Length: 168
Image (cartoon, rainbow, N blue to C red; front, side, top):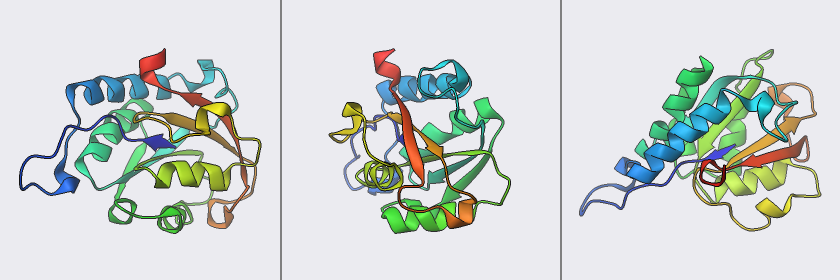
């Protein structure tokens, strides 16, 4: 799960969904992409299956975060309108559509939904790094312990690690 990288402020009169990444956010997105390419070497992410799919909100800032991750992984990118301003149920509906046999999935979205989803999917205890809402560009690794994507539900994962490109 990824909270999109740092966004620039909204231009006067512009729609929120059009907000792009700030220069800091572009650096963070590049750092997230680099981390995605070497997950097995990051503490807590060693057991995470290589992501084959990136699900992303239709907002510009989420797409700008997700695209370099998908490129680095050679993963398919699904831009989902329902992930923009969607709640946990909306994200879960998208995850339930992931084809059986798909390895890891990266979801790039917005808070509070990303944080709520991590807490909902992850079994306790939750790492201290997730006690409060994580900052933009936070990657949270979830090791899914359940069966298929279509049956994924509450408590079907363990939080395995938290990564932030500004803290590495």
